[in-house]
Each structure stands twice: as structure tokens, then as C-alpha cells.
Image (cartoon, rainbow, N blue to C red; front, side, top):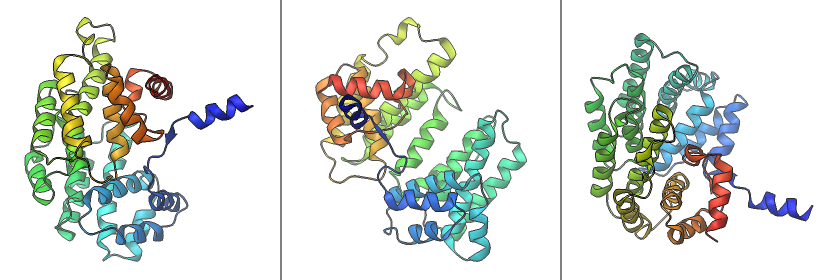
Length: 312
């Protein structure tokens, strides 16, 4: 029994809210059919904390995608701008739910969703999140969307180093969607190098490397010889050390999505054999885990626990 308790205590913690208890409670409100909690949560956010606002909106939208709670909120408070922005992101999440079901949404459904997002951008012109919604939605268009460049410029005009927006842009540029491995790396490295010291955008090269590995394993199989040094080649090591220097060493305060970014960094470090550096990041994580990118190289919980224990 004591062994089981120790094992349970050592198990990684999976919390999509990343410790944001008010966000977790608001997601539960949505599941229960209540919109008042999400309304109060979004209204209480710090002005211009776009990182936390986007994290909250995206998680609330995921929770609301299979219900009509957001529509009920809009019907009750049609002039509430937060309801408009959340409704737009919820519609984007619904389009991705259709795609995950095996059928890509039709062009008319995507265009209708894009119009809802554009309306949200007009209602709250200073908010970058409607443009994050559009950059996310652009992936679902066959061949990409002709306005992607314009949407990207509008997003960066409001927040040039927006964390969620850059991760969505990276996915758009990936070989899995509308770009190539080379384009994704160029985007990631350029974004990381131009971001200020302490910015989590320094982790983008690790996200690009993980996505490339996932795509190549899916399309080529896991035994491809040139994947042997995927995680530990000179470029990978340079990227990891740059991330440690530009982000971790210069990081002054935690951000809303640090848990996700720390997991990307830790995963890259252990795969590259930099266990001393990984031990430091595991300490910062304090057992908080994400399934991506650990699931790309095996069972995510087993991977996380095994590597964490090896670095102790």
C-alpha cells in the first residue's frame, strides 16, 4: 500500500488550465450549462494580458463547443464583447471537431465561421484573439486561406509576440498543413530570435522539431535512418541552448501557458541527452505534464516519469 501511495504521488499531473483554478471552475460551469462564471472570469482579466486571455478563451471555447451555452450568453447579453469573442472561438473549435471526426468542413461552413470571427474583431478592435481564431481556422481551408497573411499582420499589430498566435502560425506553416519542415523551422527560429529576452517564443524551435518528428513518423515510419539524430544533431543542440539562454535564464515571471512550453523544452532536452539541463526544468514543472509532445515518442505518462526519474 505504501508503494502504491508513492507511485500515485509521483504520477504527473494533467491540468489543461495549468493551475488557473478560476478557469477550471468556469469550464465546469459551461459543462453544467451556466455562462455566468465565464462572463465574470473574462471580465476580471487584467487589461492587455493577452496571453492569459487567449489561454482562457481557447479552453472555454473547447468546453463550449458541444453545447449551446455561448449562444445562451449572447442571447441574454447581446452587447457583451467577451461573449462575441468567445462565440467566434467556439465556432472555430466546432470546425476542428468536425475535422477530427474524419470529414473536413465545407467551404461555406468555414467562410461562415470566418465571418463570425471578423465580426468579433470589429466589436473588440484592440483584442488580438479574434485574429488568433482566424489564423487557427485558416488551417482547415484546402490549400490554406488567401487572407492568411493579412490576418497574421492584424494579429501582430495588436500583439507582436503573441504566444498562442505564433504556435497557431507555426502549425499553419508545418508540412502537415500548408508549408514544409523548412518553412516551419525558419518561422520558429525567426520568431524566437526577434522576440524579447524572456519571451516564451524562444520555445518555438522545440515545437517545430517535435511536430516534424511526429509528421515524419506518421508518413515514413519510425525507422528512418536520418531520424537517428533528429533530437541531438548540431542544429537541435544549438536551438535548445538558445532557448535556455533566451527564455529560461531571462524569464522574470510565469505566464499562462508556461507549463506547455516547459514540457516542450524538457522533452527536447532529454531526447538530446542534456539531462543536467532537463533536471532544472523538471524541477520548475513540479510534476505538471502535458501529453504533447511526450506522446510523440511513446506513452506520454511513462515517458515523462521515466525521464524525470533519470534526471534526479
